[in-house]
Image (cartoon, rainbow, N blue to C red; front, top):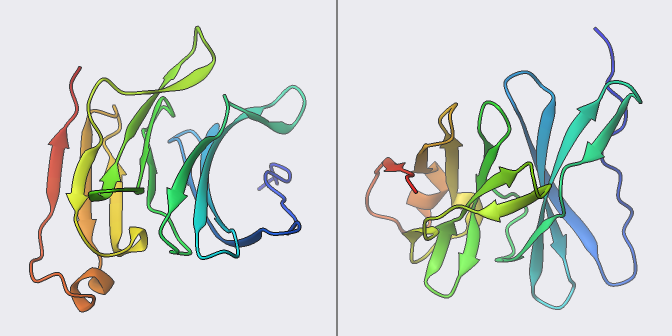
Length: 168
């Protein structure tokens, strides 16, 4: 085995404390997405989703586009999924209506992540981001969302698995 270098190092700075990180990879391991939860120490959190590509020539993980920044709900973990080829991603986001799962697609020509041509899928009106798990199919067109046991303990009275076909 061989190490692929340090990917992600952050230090606590001033008014920010890092609460947790989630990482997922493309099937070939050449693309990695992370979701970092930042505690703003004022009762709010911020979720920073970043994507990196392995640059074998320089043996480094290089940023793939700009970070996607969303408000958080205080959870220390954010469900995150990346398609097999690393060209689509989704994560749990907090909206006025509850927890949603926006889908972003990589625009190679513009070198940026763009919201997919669908509205973020609203999943829950209560609970926390960390109460759910999310996956994307290998081609990035089917989104699966499922509650964890914690969601059931926290008051959800149904166990359901949602499959959403993403089409433009």
